[in-house]
Length: 423
Image 1 (tube, rainbow, N blue to C red):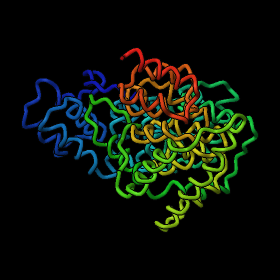
Image 2 (tube, rainbow, N blue to C red):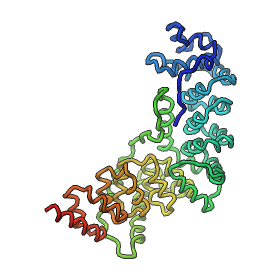
Image 3 (tube, helix red, strand yellow):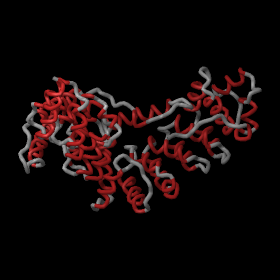
Image 4 (cartoon, helix red, strand yellow):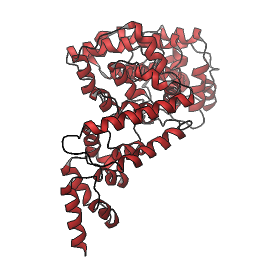
């Protein structure tokens, strides 16, 4: 949810701005306003530029947006000093100047700033602005989307968001992060705030995570006035992921060929294979020279839980195998998990049963045929789910299930019956 932009009414815009952008204003004058050439006071200029931008005029709206980005601080500051500056204009400033800490600090402190504007800015703003937003405790307790946004902003210090989450849980605030259950569990287990570790988390969220965040910022900045935004769906750059794709594919292939565990060894056997896969991941990291695996291994549970949402495909590949359930479940719950990952994870017999069970319940994933097939052949899939998936398989794949030695005998028997019925 983002701020709902609409054209301002005459009384909101004010007489000075309305004179140059109202329905009776001549077209050439609107063109001058869009280019910042009209002799207007700072407040009226910003309002007029907003009114042109929100109109979605194909010729002038992009021009007015660029004009706002190029305005000197003297004009921006003059407009922000005006207590009558509409909240819609404040939101536009937050969108178009997401890297300008000086402007953003003035915006978030303005008396007319909207809650949705604060949420949008919190998602992308620099560290100093994150601190300012977090200090307004009354505001974010009332509007927990601000907490959610700061949590997903890698610029927000770990100690800051940790304190906010502690208070939110204590006050029973309805924070709707995908991994909120796991966060609560980590807090109950005694996770404590440690400002000295902020630098550690900042280091691990550099590189690819920071690059992805830059795309998120650009996505917000470049959005049109009435465009629906889903910043969680900004696609990750696939550059440099070739080795990881190969590792995921190999993991899926190897997992399906592992023998079924003996009775009473269901959890012990995967642990050894899990260590082998993590060792392979560590070797891959060492080969690239980035040492990312080593950095991740030094993180505390609350830090890993957050990285599971912020991190890359590689980060999730490692964290989903973490021995801490809260960490591994956070990885599979990340909005960034893509179809290729799910296909590989569905086939992976070394993952915890909770992970496979979670995948089995996500209808948007089980609509993918390869996910359904892999889950059916995975002995950790809940029996009821596996039986349901069996009915959706093609005959040649039912045959694979019927003669598989890596699944419960009841499922194999059901597959053989299905084959006999088709004869």
